[in-house]
Image (cartoon, rainbow, N blue to C red; front, side, top):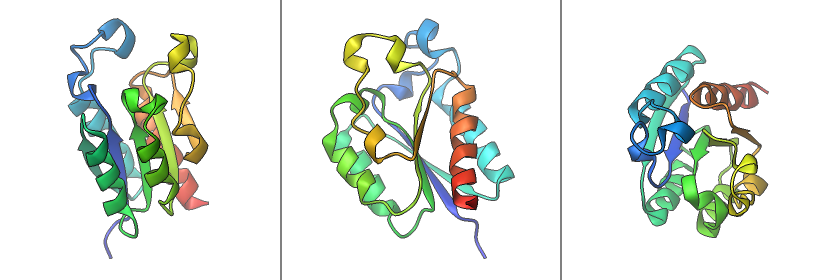
Length: 147
């Protein structure tokens, strides 16, 4: 029997982690975060798949492809957090747990970052914990799957 799959989605500009505003987002690269997430998922009996895109439609397609195939989704939507209703709608149609993730704390930043269109369709949000957030979000999704 294969392990349940957790889908990790990474939105726009996250491919620049480690280079882009390290004072806000830290020095770890996206590959570092994916590795930490994979290790945490594996320790919880989950396989991890990762998709990063700077294009909203590709992330929507990834959520659609996860339906009936993946057990849970952890999503760091990046700037799509604040306006990507298509991602909201796709996540709303996903049957399993959804955990929203942010390295920084959007509520402590510019006012335009305070609104999340993803939060209403997520089971919870992990934000402001930097690189620890990835491990926390994967663990939260695993806990939700465990009931």
